[in-house]
Length: 339
Image (cartoon, rainbow, N blue to C red; front, side, top):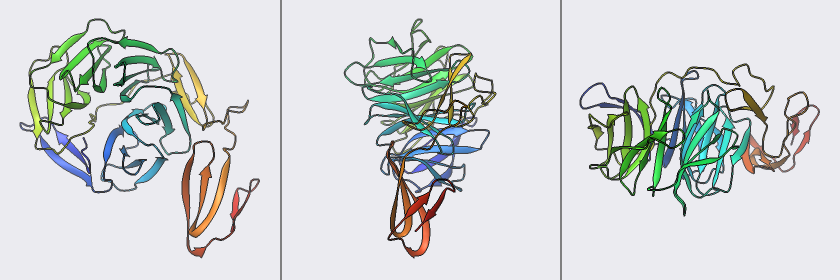
C-alpha cells in the first residue's frame, strides 16, 4: 500500500496486521500503485512531480518511465504484455506505457474525471470509474474500443475498483455513498458488501477471499469477505491518508499477447483472441510490425543534453557531466548525438 510519501508492505495474516516500510520520501505525493511479480518491481505515480516511477521493492534502481502525467490517480499493470495503464483526471484520459518506459500511448480520451482502473488481460478487458457529471463504471476492450457503461445509477464518487477473476465480478468503493459494492461484468447481480462505518474509501484490491480497501477518514485498511461482506475487520489503522493498495498475489495465465506478436511497441489484448500493436503517440507500426522513429527535438544546456518528444510531449535529460552544451545535433543513421 501507499500513502503520500511512503510505500509499505502489510501482512494481513496476523491480527492486527503488521506493516513494513519498503521505502519512504523518494516521492512526496504518491497516489497510483501497481506491481510486477515477474520483474519484482513496483510502479508508483507521484502527483506532485507528475512522474510515474518504477523500482525494486526496496526502492532501489528507481527509474522514470513516464512524465507529464498531471493527475495519475490510479495505476494498473498488465502482467502479460508488461505495460502500465493509468487514469489521468486532468487530461481525462487512460494512458499506457511499456514497463521500461520506451513506448507510451493514449487508449481512452474525453472521459469525465476518471479515477479507479482494473485490467483483465486474459479477457482483454478493462473497467474504470468516473466521478464527473455522470458518475459510473465502464467496461471496454483494453485498447479503449467497445466501451459500455455498466453501472450508471445509485453511484456518486466511485474510487478504487478491482476484479474478482475467479467469480467474474468487479468490486468498487464509493466515497460519497460510503459503500463497498460488487457486480457481474455486465453490471447485473449488484450487491452491497459493506456500508456500515465506511467513511471515505479510496483504493481497493482482492487477496484470497477478502476485499481490502483504504479509508482516508478512518486512516486504515479494512477487509471483508468478497462474496457477502461478512467478517468485516480493520487490518491496520493509524495510516495518514492511505491511498492505493495492491495484493502481491500470483499473476498468471495467457492472453492474445502471450506469444509477443508485436515486434516493437506495446501489445494490447482486445478480447480473448485478438490484439493490436501500439507505438508511441502519432507513430504507427510499420508493415513488418516495427515502430518508426518518434519525432524529437534535442536541446543543449548546462551539464546535460535533453530530448523532447514532440508528440507526447515529454522531456528527458541525457546527463553529460562537466560540460556546457551550447549546440547540439543528431545523426539519425548512426543514432549519435554531437554537442
